[in-house]
Length: 452
Image 1 (cartoon, helix red, strand yellow):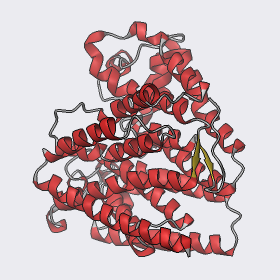
Image 2 (cartoon, rainbow, N blue to C red):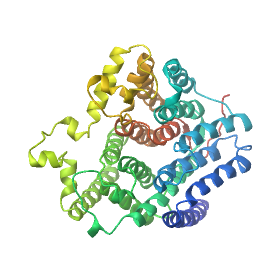
Image 3 (tube, helix red, strand yellow):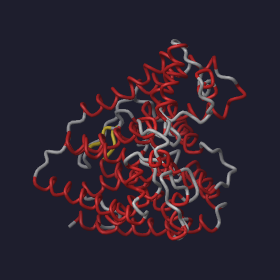
Image 4 (tube, rainbow, N blue to C red):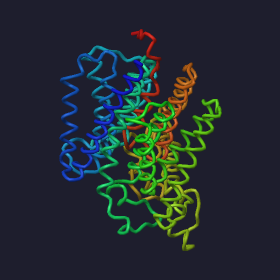
């Protein structure tokens, strides 16, 4: 009886919060300047209302999760008096505020080690390239802070779910925004490139990554029966997020979702009859949405996922791995060449994109692959960070006893890591997901005894 009352109260709160965030998305489409104002207001609410008394770190993480979820909405509006990398500043800033004001502690030396390993290459950092340093390096720096802050920190399961929901509330604002900003489908000319029109006019890669992260969390909610208001609303959001992600024609986000869910189910689900039925239902829904979207785009979506381009269709360009990866293979290979030529320190944070010309590529686009960027810009110290990014999730999951929590952490880790291969750390998603998955989740009836 008690659980039913708690679930009922939680469901009503979800309903109002989802409705409020849908309204916020509508307002953002009509009046974009409201977005940075709201984010600023949320920052002040945290600093003056919650920071001092948050010993268990739950409120800090809920605020960080929500603001990270708003990141792409803020960038999409193009209205800026806040830094472009706001979510990364917020992640590092809120963690430091909580440490000093609430007198909490870093709990994992691994995160501190990541920060230390990033320091040597700073001697090669030119001050005039500050914004590129921030764009390329603050993501991995935030990840180091997050792991140091949350690694092995005990948190109740219900509080953990609340943090995940905070991110999803923000996602509903963004998906509402791009729905309003998208022209009528009859006016959109779908081709074999990424489609900015269906992404609200912003970068499709980052939009699809955010939506993919939202889908991962929604699937976790469905699997664990912790719904956003109720099962119907949660399933509807999952289907609509998937539709919107497909319409961007950016593949990375959905490939990340597929990998993280498939591997996590295989590794950490016993695949009883109920789990097999869930997978079949998920596969049927996913296939149906893909077929519907493919028809909506005149068959272009399927060709896009097959790696076709206008050049490969006409026969003027051969389809190879670099074409399928939209040029990322070239960037990654040059990162590795830069490392071989600058083995110890690399070329310095933020510099790699301006040194490609030495290898015959005259393209200054930011790096897309974090693993190779770390090698090219941080040298042998970047190699050490790469090893931590792989081995830390293995360590955390191996130390987790409950299979449910293994599954949840696996979804978060795999999606976060997969994201770094197509979107580097352009968003704050990877630090957030690594940080949340690094916590020691415990059941509500267990006592929390933190070790300082």
